[in-house]
Amino acid sequence: MKSLALFRRKNRQRNFKPFYEEWIQTLRDALLPQLRRSISSTVRFPHFVSSDVESIHSHFISYYDALDLAASDDASQVLIPDWRNPLEKPFIWLGDLHPYLFINLLRSFIIGEDPSNHTDRNWQISTAWKSPTRELSNRVDEIERGLRLMVPALVSRAREAQGKFVKKVAVDWRRKEVVGKAVGEEMEEMGCVVVDANRLRRSVLADILVATNVYQAAVFLEGLAQFVVGFRDGQLMAEFDRCEAVDVTQ
Image 1: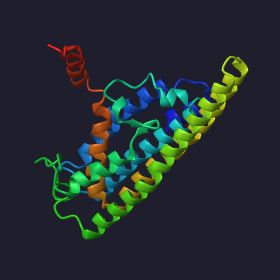
Image 2: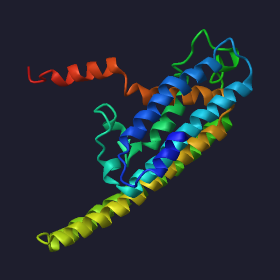
Image 3: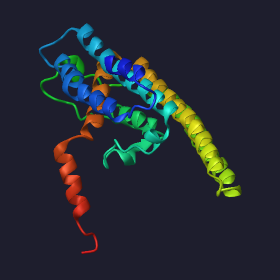
């Protein structure tokens, strides 16, 4: 939250990369380890788990708040980010993770593909996803139906903004002032689209946390946090670089 406050106070054209690097470092080095300590077998008090669930949720909200500011100031640094590595970029939709990833992760726990069944977890955590309720499954279906309506609408708005830009530039592409104005208008609209996409991501995360109990939420957020910080894993990046270097024609 301090990083977000600093981001707000800085000039409007501040590069988003420093904030993101600090944000993900805090998630990796502080919040995720603390959550894992709370769900270990040595801690059995639900208010500890609840507090750490709220901390990670708030951390994601602060990130989307900062991303809103960045998109409103200069949508290009969000839509064409030089601060994303090659592992992250395939998962990016309108500035960040596609909200369907949240639902897919949640469904992996519901259908029994829980990768976090460790022997060092307390009983409430290790059994959190053993028998998910029908009510939870129905609620997840409702959230997904909402995504099926909202995602195409946002994609359509982005497509329309790009279409308007092409039409304006095609008419008088030799005049720099015309092109500059068209670029500004497109970036303004695309910034609004990214802000609405972030609103959708926030909504999906909030709906998931409301639908799950505190132990299910803890396991879900652990998985989400691990997914996000995993993009910055040095060993994984090295393996990715080796794969890129392989000549597939051989």
